[in-house]
Length: 357
Image (tube, rainbow, N blue to C red; front, side, top):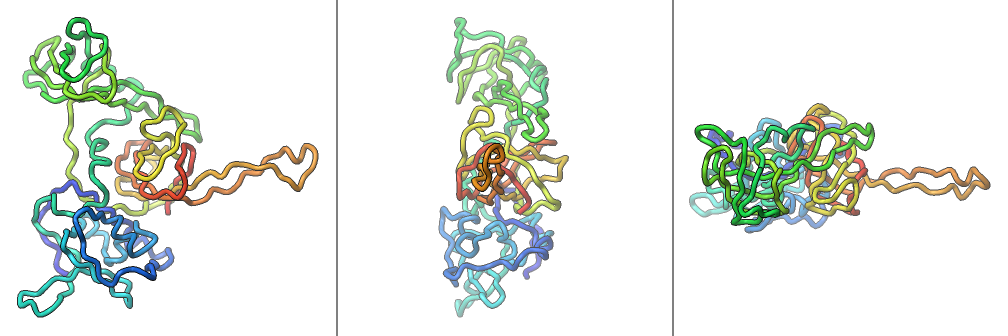
């Protein structure tokens, strides 16, 4: 394996490698698909998860194909359009092929880091799916927005604000106030389906605003909106998405939790499919971290015992949950996490289980 490059690359590339090799000793050997290609040329639009699915039905165990160790996963190596992947079926390992200087043939190389623009790197998934969730607060304490700057008035007493409208905000203050702001409203509670405790409240994202005149009240112009805004809504300085490189992996401990909500739905209703965002009733305090991959277990419901008669027949038998997909944890709070559904053989619903795969 080539010596790890010392260059630091900061990139918003969500590399859907997963599962530390050192944590796989208790798992069955990684099975390659019978039709896995011996050679594959990476093309623009590919994702790492999609490429992995060409080779195995367990794409989150991608690092095993590369024989990567934990240290390498902290700064994952990247692949690019035009790279040629070579499969050695005898060892069950992938490598990159490249022409040598003399053009005499292919040279096997390990996954490597290049100092190239982010646009050329192959991401794990389309980055736009989770970028908005990385810079916006999603979970707040019961009083978490109470001290945030608030819209107190609108131009010409408009009830509903739209892009281009002016609003007046108290609480921005400061000698050098931020220019860009996100607008929020406190949403519904996130209730643990197992303990019935309120773990926090969702912060409902409404849109963006830009400061045009400091003061108290300050003047802002609404620059975008995804929901209606009005007096009483709160502003939080717009943060930038953190540039991160990481490789999703199995949790280091046994995790058993439940899906609480599906982002964009109201309460514990609705169904989700691939690339939907869900909330989970487990977080940092339970041992979850960014990059963890969890298996989804669908609730199959309960049935009557047809072998019984009378009142005994009314007793319901709870059917076992069936594994139906995977979620990728991309943002973690103390007791709540947000995850992206990467695979789903069945519709995903609130109260479905999530476990260490």
